[in-house]
Image (cartoon, rainbow over all chains, first blue to last red; front, side, top):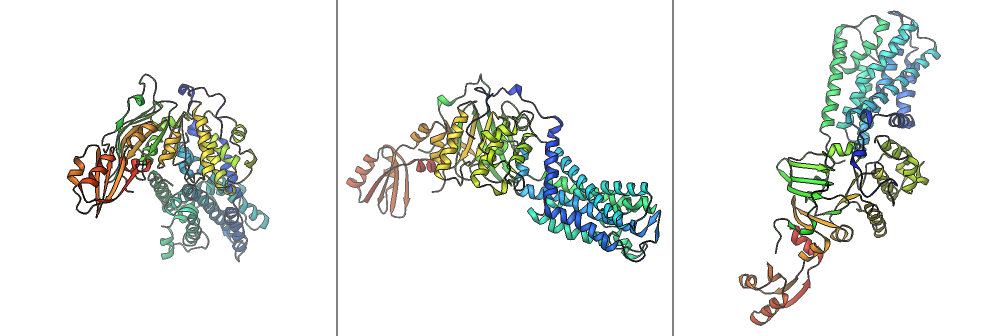
Length: 266
Length: 311
């Protein structure tokens, strides 16, 4: 801290200074963000180990080989568990914003050329990558177990749709991260997402047309789950798509709203 | 004498032909009904080391936030290096060191420097920065495992990464011991001697006097004095006579030559004056005042007097 740049003269030449390209987006930052996620033991356990374990627990229940669309029940459960795991991972990634904010890191970043939108984009990319890893882990668990069966194309289509759908929960994570201070965000998100998974036709099957089904169709996990499983089930009710779009809009809107209010000196 | 408007001194008026590092024009900032900054005009020339001195709540931090583009003035204009604050930040021309926080505990020292360095268009190699900041040996350590002093060195390294033309420090030595404070200011002075402009907020008059070329005294959102340390100290010239005098004749006292102000607290009277001898002579020979005490007005008292802060 005792010296400064060797190249510095008596005063700084203002004209020699540039603004970084792409609003500050770069691979160094992205790499460090990914490494941080992978180093976090809690993230790894809750988002990678837990969904895979859940799949092993539920994926072999009786009737696993009954036909569903172009595959079987085990395949249906596989896609659902992958979505659950990916949603948790993405939400955890989003919620890291909360911890960063409480530690004043967000403020440090605001004193750099990094554009807020680029920061969010980086977080979204990290969430997507982590979501993809979670989906891969559950799918590998499925292959190892050997019960799920569906055409390879369907398998890949479901996995890709699941990863895209996790963006809804990355946005939710950011939103909750801003609402709930510090490290408590994950305490809200973990049980919250489990609850939404139960009432949203992800963890336990809900009979179509029942009152429970109507309730479920309004909850945030319902729409994305129907979308992620649509290549398998060949069914995609219009209200499921509407559900996913509306919840995405709500979570992104909420995150953007909280972020714009984020002027506190934390 | 209470300085009402800004007490300006001729030799601190900027040479307007050179570019200013900081320029505030009639800047105000309200938070709801609260007027945190009530019209500040300030020019800082490149290379100056300026102390922004004032009690808590004077508007120092609010002003620094506006210089960093973290908040927008309610009215008036803020320019840094001839640019809007956000543009100056985007060009890596302004940095700030926060007193606490601002670091992620789960990142290593090296990762933190690499992360921040990656965000600027022009920076030096991470290794050079680590070495120069004396934290090479800490590179692999998690920030959360570093001591307070080590974290402060890291914050410094980060602030100097873009080689900023202007360095803003908000209460930089809070929590530092005497030794740490001396080392800190030694480094800042050395750095400033190479031409960097430094503006630091502090509520320690001594710190401002010792380390700044120029002191800008703020109180209740306004600049109340602006000059060198000795000029500000001159404002504090005079002594205080304290005496026990029930039913003091304030009018007579005030009318005496060289009396700045008179304060009555119960049976005691406090007279601030340049010529305390006259006051003492009057009190002892023409009144029944007793228990006289004459004290020199210290810097702290001058500070209180100028800023109107409560003792």
